[in-house]
Image (spheres, helix red, strand yellow):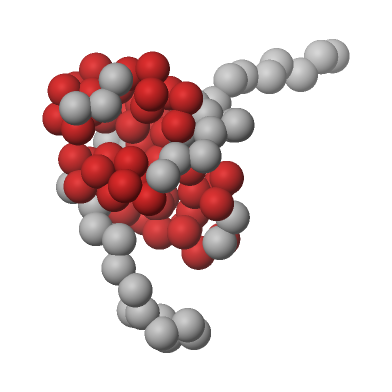
Length: 98
């Protein structure tokens, strides 16, 4: 008997602001910049790259490139996208649970 393998797109599960915030908070906690950028890309796809492009003034190509596996978005791009997604980047003392 062979196993069926299904493609899973995490963007499909990001159907609420709360789900998006939890997803990004988990990514930020890793401290892995590439993983954080890819996670922002997943959220951007969940919301729609065309709409995000209109809201941010960044081209769809720039968004896809910035948040790809090889992407390295600037802080300005990340903050612009996060603002358009309705997500804040906050700081807290390390080890403090909120």
